[in-house]
Length: 413
Image 1 (cartoon, helix red, strand yellow):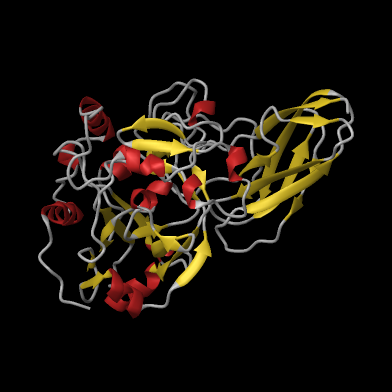
Image 2 (cartoon, rainbow, N blue to C red):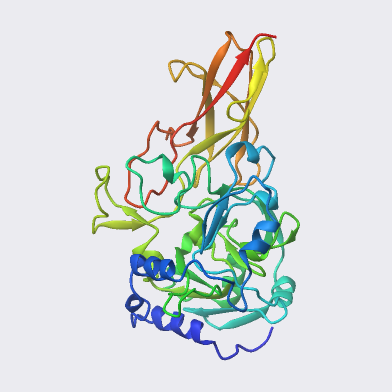
């Protein structure tokens, strides 16, 4: 472990914001940032020190559907998730800024703020200082499934089942690192800052904070590996936070600074975006002044087999499969309908493994007629929350967890 070094300019701006000077607020709200990024896109080439979109796409499967180029966003449909855990080449892509091309040997993680001693680690030092843990955990963009909302909400046009993944992570527990630094009595939130650059100089650094209770969760990690290999550059190499079960923006990529605060961080990615109305609003209404930060995902499920429009012969059993998950709590049951929700049948649910990993459900079905057949999946959590047909509308299109449906054809043998 080495003595903390002089912070760079982006970190200095971050700490100024932590101190309450309001530097980030002066950079404008999310709308201003989006406008600036739109004016800078498309660009003829990636700026120096960043990864090209071509390189990112080359590491992904052809089934990846891209929604924007700057920042790059993309995901695979539900039937491409028919695995125990999400393969690296199928993990969704969602960046707020550009993808930095960082040197693992030069990268440092600094822990600062309301702690007894400031710490700085290289990746190698971090790996040696604390016990490593490996666990699966859901990662999902707050706007996953956004295109299902009517009227269409603003933001990345994620498809009905786009914008989520459940890979396996390896790293150290955030709480172990915080314990080594020593928390002061008024420590309440933990903020992470990434090293991703903006397409314009005025772009606010990506900073999000989580409450101390979530930071101290055994499943909140500082990760350096995904699915047994190094983090891909687009997914945070060489280091990222993994706050499974919560909106993906909480899992800061290219992590370079962790700061302990006495209150939630105030900045573009906490107050301008990734917020939802405190109370339900009518479809089409603007964001009210009374909002809360987006945190844990509600109960959700999707069918991963069969694929849409797949054809089966009449005497052929259909081994339906899917995934179910929830941001906090656990999945209690999943039900399947073959008659547009008139009747429901309980699916088999695999045992829970890691706390924030999705769970596989299955149902063996023998078609009763020829023609078009629609499967619906509906999950329920341990608190009695049931997936709705249509969730409450919100202006940014967050937390879509409506019932997933897949249609197939059944033909004579």
